[in-house]
Length: 204
Image (cartoon, rainbow, N blue to C red):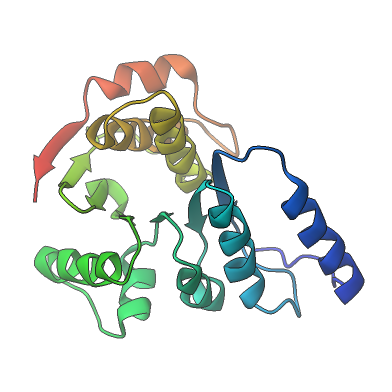
């Protein structure tokens, strides 16, 4: 991770004002690491602003930004297994431990907990739905951008009125499609559409 520039308090306030002025926010994705010196409470504040305005908020970050940000109760978070373990304060090795940890966070008020499980796919824990979506075995060229693509696929599915199960398949297909391309290339639509048909969904 390249660290960002130093941000002054004035610039931070300008950004908050811009956040408050976004018109009719529907779905907001907050992702990435914080610039040096910026208090992780900023993520919590941004989440609360957007939620008060009726937006669905997805938080995709790690470390302090995630552990503090979740107190703003984002609608969706997407930790990997290690980040999930840090959040709940225990090492997670078995699948049932991972599911249990995701449930713990869901019970704290986070509507949907997505857990990145690498080549195994993505776990989804929500109020009445719990699935693991697994991609087919593919030749991985690179993993840069795969997590961001998975988030984009999930949001795209939800924005099209798809079920959680379908949106999860979109997430895994988009993330996997990105791994097929070398360097920092993003996923291609034809790969995404082909992979959607090959995602396996399991109830957990």
